[in-house]
Image (cartoon, rainbow, N blue to C red):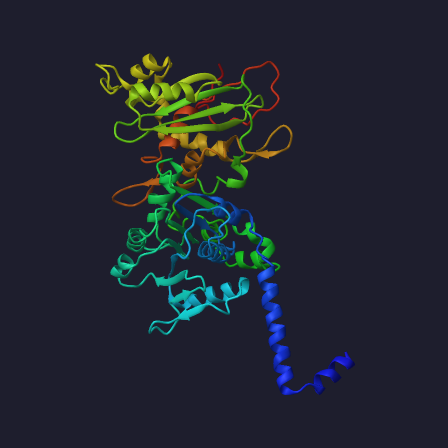
Length: 476
């Protein structure tokens, strides 16, 4: 150390400046050489998605800005590992909720990349609103409060929304992504505002109505290794239960009246699919509709009398064609019963002579659908039963388990269960004891399936849940 100090004192001012420049150049070379970016599970899933629109509804602190920054950089360089056909140079727009966040983005760029030869332009603004890279690619910053026509007049190849945008901003930007055929959009943020995203993107994706959209949700724990010690514990102390749902789990803030949020837990009730044993019985439940897609689920039971939602489907096909799709849907399963909403028994609803929807499906597909009964559609009883199934209790093996699980591939049923709300009295706004399943078609199917659930009959009972109600619990 003494020798180094002695040498440094002997250097002239010019030599010291040259030494500083050499050290800075070496640091830049090292920065170019190392990536340093190791995506967590959420980031990796979003990067690898090929969809035109990706929506990430996530908790605070899951690495959203790093995700956005790397998407922008890879695209600008034409080096995106999962989008090989990019055109360079290209032009992207980064939409922030306020100009104050520009500096945070610049700091994030500097954290990962050598930005010494990037051109930053203010264009008459007090903040940088445009970045031009040496290869000609551009980033442009825009903000939620700008005039609506500003979004209409922009032309670009991709858009990144740093937080959920107002709908008019989103629509204007979508109109502006017309420079290339492979234009894409990424929306990331904690869903504190803009409930339209739930209906227009999330629900449509979950129901299989948007094949160009993929949605993601992750809690704060996915990025725990990159957060400060005790950060999550200390942060959560100041939050209400509803705020924890939003800021720690990525739930939509406007869904405060969720009916099942106190019981349904993704990490408890959602399981990865496994090969279903051929002789384990299942029930098919169908919810038909004259103007919307028909929906169907398979509810199965294993030899331990554990219920699983194992499969779902929806289709806009005519009843005769839907019959063939439904036949393929149940292929390979031991279908114990086939139930259809009573609306399917309406005469002439099958699009074939005077036959009903149920008659058409049964004749054309060789199915055995029956109509739901009045008792099976009673609202208050099924809600009590469903809540009981979601509740975790100790079984004979002293394991805390719910009575029903959902395969992770059944995203529509999971979404309906997570986001269903209580019905409210139109005059007083008081909550009724009924679930609002008007637009929850998969949940309607589950309601019918639970009214007459599959039963696994055998002499020795290995596992039995404590009985709560007699509704839908009969043995065959």
